[in-house]
Length: 271
Ligand SMILES: NC(=O)c1ccc[n+]([C@@H]2O[C@H](COP(=O)([O-])OP(=O)(O)OC[C@H]3O[C@@H](n4cnc5c(N)ncnc54)[C@H](OP(=O)(O)O)[C@@H]3O)[C@@H](O)[C@H]2O)c1
Image (cartoon, rainbow, N blue to C red):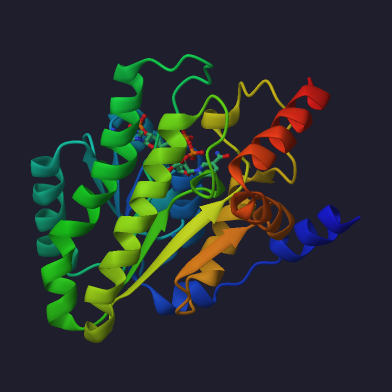
């Protein structure tokens, strides 16, 4: 009942974001949430700079965006490569001007594993932490200079607490939230906004093979609409869906031993 009401409310379109932002720079746009964010933003007069490694996917998804009237620039490449993102940011700046909404969305989770291998954890940290820094940093001087702009960082509710089998993912999201929280102090006096977005489960390639139940799971379009609607405010952090955010938030403040017993009991019951 609560979940369906939540879905109905989230499904209502709110195009106020289209009035606020005209130039978006979005990483991880070749699938899932990034593609959905680009789709929601696309409209006549809107310019999109889209980053991902799979060029064929970028080409495929850009067609419907252009049909919706958006101007689209594609940047096939890897967010782990700071030099590439510096060039992409410079090119977007030259062609379209300063983006008023930068969405650092690209991310990976890696295989769920009780015995995480170190190389995978390094990839996760390189993408989810360094990749986000690489995305934001080239724009910081110009955003400060113009005194406007919004940065949205797509993190996760997994940043709230250590979850079993996902140490690298939880650590990377928690680390980037801390780094971004610190950057906010620097940006705020210049009128530049930074909002950390912590979503729960979203149906995308990342969660396609999840073996466990996904409470309050959302479709990517629904999550993208909610994010762009909330991004119109000046909130430091947006976490959703509310029941899961509160539940995990509560677990995160419990003593570790009690939290681990509760999580273990929940996971054992679900399997
Ligand atoms: N799905 C969920 O339940 C969920 C929940 C909370 C938070 N999130 C976060 O939401 C964001 C989007 O994830 P998603 O669910 O939409 O997953 P997804 O469908 O797998 O999309 C991930 C996107 O990131 C791109 N990407 C990955 N590594 C990259 C790299 N090194 N360089 C450039 N692009 C890269 C991928 O494109 P290429 O492979 O083409 O490079 C793809 O476009 C992630 O940050 C994720 O952590 C997801």
